[in-house]
Length: 321
Image (tube, rainbow, N blue to C red; front, side):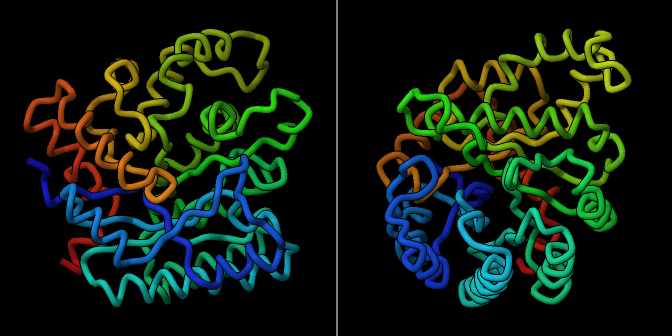
């Protein structure tokens, strides 16, 4: 039987302001050719109640605000964050929310981050794997990471298409392979830039069980410890330990072989529940829940992944409960 206390850390929403911005930009599909899904709080709550999700932490998916110029991006971020705060207020106890920022503009992102966390009291921030090729370990983002570290913030990372994607010529949708690869790229950017070490208080959530990281971690750590990386090299055991600093959600990643690879890399304390709704529609959410329930977790481990680990990331939930 589903646990009604489950916290979904990977749930998306499309408020009216965001839908209008997409329409104004002529975007009928999203990053990677994905259709714009239907979403309403009532429909979201319906599937949440059906599968036993108590709280869904909402965020905007790719393309984030990358399709707009800087001025319009700032305006849209403010509108989306205001909508998220209102959604959380109207449905108290059922929705949390991650702020969206107008990256790669750091100055305006800092201002909006402070507003979102201090005034709107959102539950953290959602960052794309990169913004115009600027990955999260890039030195240009240091002031942003410093502010997030000061606040011990929870950062939900969401993939987007790499800048060079069209040049690959594969004619495959980006979410199929490039989203997992880009998640891995930004995780390595954080590690090998030293940003992960410099900002120990940030709680980073990697989506989709960490992309390709669980499978590639031994290879990455081995090469990353050599002179090829020069001063950026990280000793192999230190890299493996650093990967366990991330949290990993289960969105679209509940097959036994995926979870086995993830559990070989990190302890159960670092795994959190996710659905990717509505990009994973109701049928996929139901299917994922059935697969998740069948995983070889003990009852205690199931409870940790469903809600126990997430409570550590979202202290505000307890205050609002």
